[in-house]
Amino acid sequence: MAKRSRSGRTTSKNEALAAVRGNAPKASPNVRRLAAFAKVHSCPTAVLAFAAGVDSNRVLTGTRLEMPFGQSPFAIGRGVAFENLLRQHGHAELRRVLTEGLEVDFALAPVENLRQGFQPNRTGLTMRASVTKNHMKEIVTGLPRPIVLDGAVLRAEVGGITAFFEADEMAIGVGGEILVGENKSWPVVDGRPTDADALGSALDQAATYALLGRRTLAEVGVDPDRVSGDVVIVTPRNTGLSPVLHRQNVDGRIRRIERLLAAVPAVSDIAEDLPAGLSFDPVADTSADDDARLDAFAEITDQVGNVYEPGSCLTSCGFAWACRECAFGRGDPAVAGGSVARALPGVATLRRVSELGRGAPPSVAEAPAAGPIARAGRLYDEAVPVPAPRRRRPA
Image (tube, rainbow, N blue to C red; front, side, top):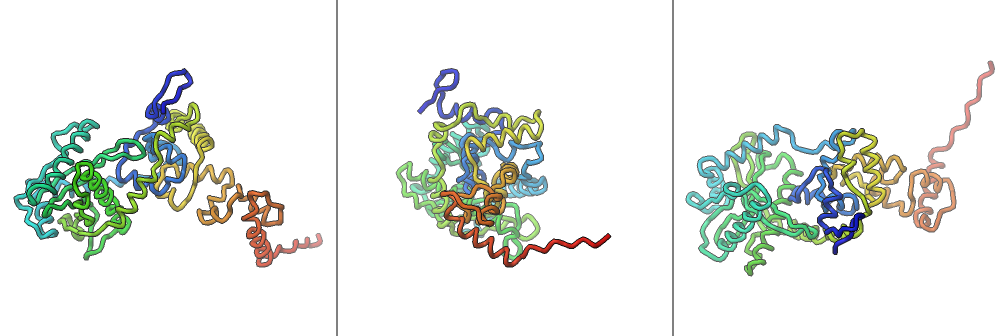
């Protein structure tokens, strides 16, 4: 449903969210952003930023509360070098590693590079998604020959927003079945990944592509289970760049990601409830001083609401340090951690926790937590007695 702006003109949900984003840095939905959003999707401010396409990692750039997200230039350079190695000489190294790892001869298999020949914009992504869909149908309904799509694109609706997701080797055709492939430049030493978190993230990425691939096949009337629950991760072996393939089942991850996508709120619902004039523009205004930008952010969280949970926010959201400062400022129990905040339902501040611990009468909302807090206060007083005042020595 459309809503009326203050000028009386009817605005669509997309226009309303574009006004919320304003000139703030923009971010399109991708697998990494979706994975980060999964950890903070209970926070109204994070939901609003995701729906409006705001890049939370860059909105506070230049302030003392800018989060240090992003890969190092060395990691990026290594990744580019590894990708180039796989594509050199007609994808010779990629063909070799697929042949050895999947025990299927890819020496003469067609490898179509969908990163070339298309515009680097939304029109190009739309065309690549169409080509990907047609090739996937051919793989599972045509001749069971090996084929690789390099840079396949899948289209999906995320909260009512059309998003495009680019995979590394989306459609690896093996015997009429499709496998998803991801290239990662971190090494596997003696058969073990050097970064378990990076491996988990890569498997989540591949599982997302597998889920979207199944939905794509379902759209063209083909059995979605022809997209395998197994995925392949191509990484360097040991400390060099020589690639090696790892095959792993991700069915459990696919089910979890499916639940996540179902939980993403509809953009139309968010746009309906937006306060008038709300915008990330003043937060992202690099010409303003730190305090003005942080006050503007605090105003958004006051109007929309936020949930600060250190364990997930600090690793996934570019607003985390700003939310932490706001939480410290109002004495929010969340600064002590999510488990503490959950144990204090209805108690608004740490100061109030202290008062209840000293026997202050609770309100109706505080009653469930008041008893345990009072008992904890008594135990603390017994364990840590108040020291007697020191006597002054006579002059």
